[in-house]
Image (tube, rainbow, N blue to C red; front, side):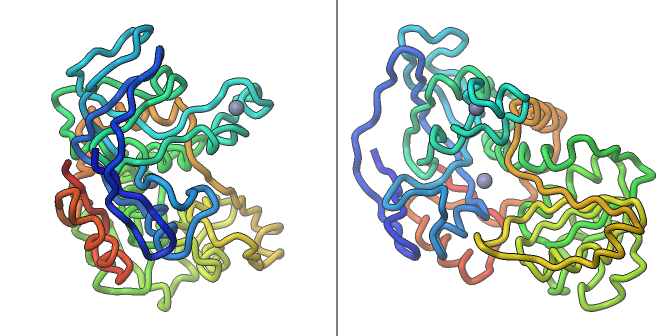
Length: 330
Ligand SMILES: [Zn+2]
Ligand SMILES: [Zn+2]
């Protein structure tokens, strides 16, 4: 089968490798669609601590069951499926506390290789984070299950309703996914960023207002801020956007070793909560699945649809800041 490998930063290679065969509890998926993701782009540009090189590349996908192990129940050849690329071990201390997204084994036991013709789903993913795709969800939308689960996780525990004023900082794929989810519950959403052209996309997707990061960001008084850039200066500025007693969700990961400075007066006397958000729990994946079933218009974030052979072109475009998410059809 054809499978793209990330060799080193800036270099990917289409390899011919054996089609894996499923053991007892595994299933083999014939990939139909895969999506590029900000994490893939980070790995492509500068390497990524959680993505080994050289190694298979890509982690957002949907497809059709090609073969199942002899002990698999619930899935059979020909089923259309949607899945994510991780699932918790249920054994480590974090899993026992219910913090499944922080599972010590999550990243060692993930699968990569969505930019391929086939992918093998191991038992823990089959059992916890694999779903039959309902007919009303297209393969294109189904491949958004993983990034949408991350977005849902960042919103867990927050009371978001039509009276909630939310600021999203950034206009990349993750920021715009936040926008779609927040508008689906009727929140008032302001998107904040530097590039006025890119901010227009947010208006097209339903933002109530866009604000340039260089303009009047003080006095926005958002109840909740989602920082979606992974830029340390923006992390620091994000507290200027929130009202007293508000919450800032730090969603965009910064490079390892980065430190940020915050105004202690604001954090203390205005009682601001800063909270990181990483990955997702199985519960978030189920919520994301339900949102897709209800028709969340995620496919509006797809910049272009290309064939598997064109992945190098796509990563060159993404590296130049062109496009949001590309869909690879296999
Ligand atoms: Zn992703
Ligand atoms: Zn665990």
